[in-house]
Amino acid sequence: MKISTREIVMAAMFTAIMCVITIMVRIFQPVVVIPFSLQPLVMLLAAYLLSPRAAFLSMLAYLLLGLIGLPVFSSPPYGGPAYVLVPSFGFLLGFPPAAWLQSHLIKKSTMVNFILAGLAGILVYYAIGLPYMYLILNFYLKNSIDILKIIQIGFIPFITLDLAKMVAAALLARKLSTRL
Figure 1 (cartoon, one colour):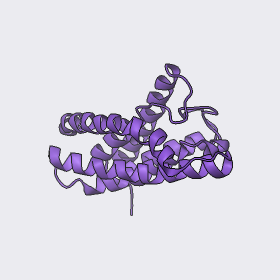
Figure 2 (cartoon, one colour):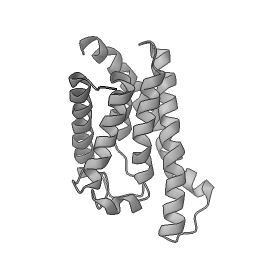
Figure 3 (cartoon, helix red, strand yellow):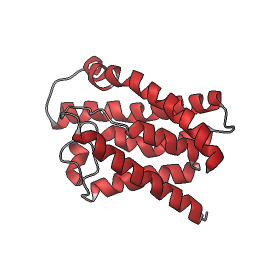
Figure 4 (cartoon, helix red, strand yellow):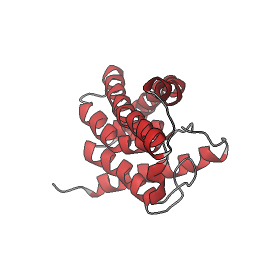
């Protein structure tokens, strides 16, 4: 399967947008277990506008840039292989498969299709992020945190914002898709 030049450029553009948005937002927030970010908005928008392969590659490239040491992640240490031990890293791991699935589910550029695909993408990164957080907090950081507490710190404060980001990304995608 050959990837087109356009797909490479679009994937790279969304990788760059993810890096820039993450760095800009982290400047203005305190350090928390799961930082507020606009990363889901960028991931959702990439999945709306790119092919499944390009959406996946753009999110994978973002992960790899951070893991090789570029300071593109939301919380300390901001990059490097040690970031895999940060409780929120699981959500980042969920972005490539979430972007792929979401993009794959979009058959028509209708708002209903965008919302349903966006919900699927959100479900994927929570399905990966929450268990990862549980494992890191309990087994690496040696905290005794139950599943209910994980939901309280990793899901409840963020799901409403993520749903709002999904709607915003869908609205932006509808406008941008005609121009791209």
